[in-house]
Length: 221
Image (cartoon, rainbow, N blue to C red; front, side):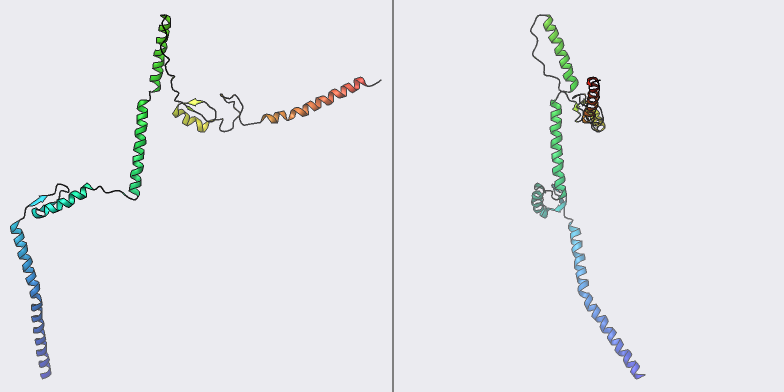
């Protein structure tokens, strides 16, 4: 019984020491928390005025705004160069835009076909009226530009949309036995040599027949 009582007293002493140690250890933490709370109260009581940056739109205290704006303005003035796939994509877009601009300028300078034909008709009327009135005809009008697309197989010319349909289906490209309207020659098929190959045989047969007839006529009776 005495030993049990002594053990319980030792446990009580150890437990009290632990509690005292925890209290001592928690004192710095409590002090820091109090200091932080006091600092927050001071900052809340001061309520500093925030000013907005003109470059990025963020808000800063008055004593820090000037320094921030000097750095922010420099960053805004320096344009970041693209790199990697985005840089290549931007280059391709710029090239495509430049080519499209050139095409638009050329199209704007070039007169449409109907306008050229109208000018040619007006020129013909002026020329006829000048000749009938005994006056000298006006200067020559430039010829109407042919904007049709020629077929590489048959040589015929079509409008651009019609040529796109005709060229893949052109019979001359497939080797058909059709005469070209441009050259007048027959294309693929049976070659003329195949027909000429029988000519010597036919002539030989005719020659042998004539020689046999002549020999009968000239033979003595």
